[in-house]
Length: 419
Ligand code: AMP
Ligand code: GLY
Image (cartoon, rainbow, N blue to C red; front, top):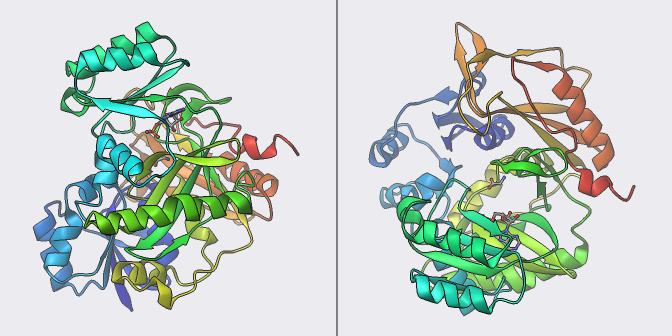
């Protein structure tokens, strides 16, 4: 059997391993309390050491889940030792690591995005804000801020205050000392994921995430409280436009920049008047979007990642199941504000449910599973359409018990509005 190492510990990584486990022996670095059920967790953080371990243990393929190790260059370290690893190089990962790099790249290659300036100069920032003719105004810190570096200012005064706080380092430290100021795009958001091998790509079904904590898209931003795929909001015309106007020029551009893009290209898109605009690139799968996408793959998942990593995607045909998956995140009591006390997780019999649970912030002690993270697990339901998949997802949610469990009750509402 093939051997796969997955780097990461969240629900995203759980889902990748869970759907690979029939094709490969799975190892995690570090994994979580539930990945132990079907895989082996290893505790090595240093990239060099981990690559040596992968070599000694004849790992055929390594898949990297989160952006942090990618931005820090894990792929370069593994490749330098002759290992096969799926993910972008440190240079290519800058598409997510630096918003300034990303915006300048979009502009250089004529890829649709919101109008902006990038600056580290307060005077320049103020002048641009004064000239903007529409509100709100979007301000973004350059560096990684764990998904919190974007502020939407409702007035010019507020925009200036945010700029001050970022440039002075008060708001996001070093990450905010360079900022993007951009126009607000008013449309609906989609997430699209392309498996890329440097030249070719496979575009997966479009997903929609729910970033806010509370129903009706209220409350603070989170890593994502639920998602579903495919979304009927992405029409065939939109898929075509995304391929032609965004993914192809991105791959060509990255080749020209001597940073061919390999790995998952995550497009955060805003659709305005039927035209897609890039809000952001991420260099990894979304979490919880990955938890819904993995079960939709109807061909070998191992091959998709392996041939992606080898630059040979043209050799395979990735098939997609005619099915919808809806994922509802169950989070712990104090998420996203702070830590919660560990709570034991009990799950009722799931045999009547069509779907699965992707475990994220969980640990195991004395053979019992505890909620120890912010986003604890994702209940993913399957069905022939959004409505049915959503019913299954909430059926699973009802079977999950732990103190402080909270979740949104309206996941996928945008797809059901018109039904
Ligand atoms: P980002 O990290 O750039 O994706 O931004 C986080 C969130 O802020 C996005 O998911 C959008 O909801 C919102 N956002 C970012 N940029 C814009 C923009 N130019 N117009 C409208 N909303 C935006
Ligand atoms: N769910 C959005 C993200 O992973 O960034």
